Image 1: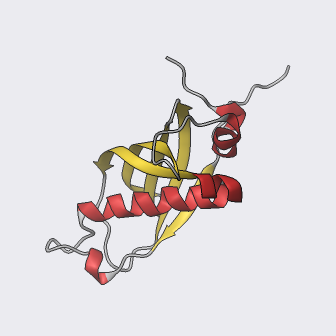
Image 2: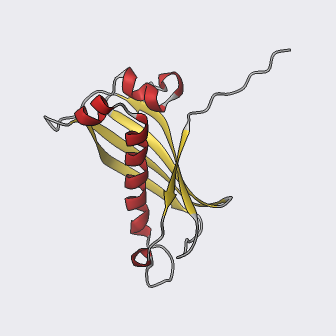
Length: 143
């Protein structure tokens, strides 16, 4: 009997450094800092997985972030951002970024990004060569 195993999109790991200025009056990482970290992690993923010509021709603009906070993070915590691209449609890509302290999930962010032509600054359709760098079998969303 053959076993079937579900394919999952690759996950990119990005280390996070919690700095003193990230801490708010409550003594934990300020909620706004997570948005900076999402930006850093998704851009690092793009820079790691894309070709040099793609990096020269394309930019990414964040359109939307939905954040679920699960537990606070503190100065001295070891944190890793796990970024997974979950689909593309037209000029948009969707990513999920999970912030983990060890096995604990601190926050989860679902974000939508627009691919933009670096010269014209206009939205640009994400072609297969770009989506294939992030998603198994192209991972294109359909609707």
